[in-house]
Length: 268
Ligand SMILES: [Zn+2]
Image (cartoon, rainbow, N blue to C red; front, side, top):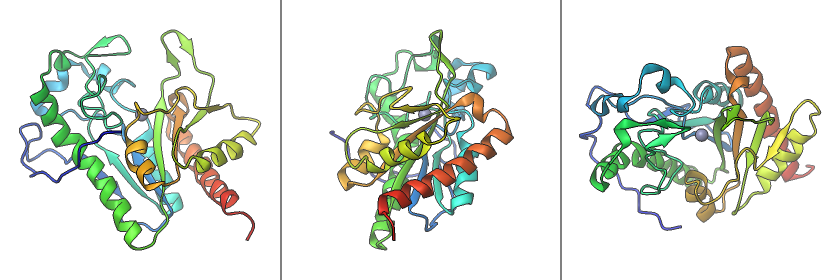
């Protein structure tokens, strides 16, 4: 995959005002767990300069704007397993951090049949400003953390946390959880599928509701060149709709991550 180098930019931006939060949030910075948790779509803020992209408050809370429940899930899971959680603060409708900058759906003009007025007719220079303000600092924070850990000889397994809407284009999605994987070192993802699959109460999607491919950006960009183990986890949003569900899934994922790690390392 062709990728531009990620460079540090000055913090002043015509997109983000100085009183607005930076695009990257890090929970438990510098934690020592082998797992590094990522939330590309955890936020739904829209920079004030973009005027809510022309969307009302209801649309801004829908799944089109973010992965519902993932910010809370990531924090809970990170605390449970002693991991860092790096997550995006701004909406994927501003720029999708799991898409290569410049990709056709990086800044969508429609999402799940909803028009995004603020994204219509965007030129390359405007798209570049959003990438510089939102996507690049986020991806650079991930790169820097992986490099820091590598220098310390610390193992890193990248875990991308996502959630999916229960119904898309009139079709119900039966899976409780999906594990997405493609190229690179996908042994950890397959170990997770095995551990999750041993629970008779769960419907587990193997590359469902989506297949991972090079349309995805974060995992291919960071994990493949470094041959890091990884898994992209998708959880159905109705299961994360209330605090008890988030608690249940953070507990389950904590167990499954540890068991999958152990199964790959073999008996000791
Ligand atoms: Zn997502």
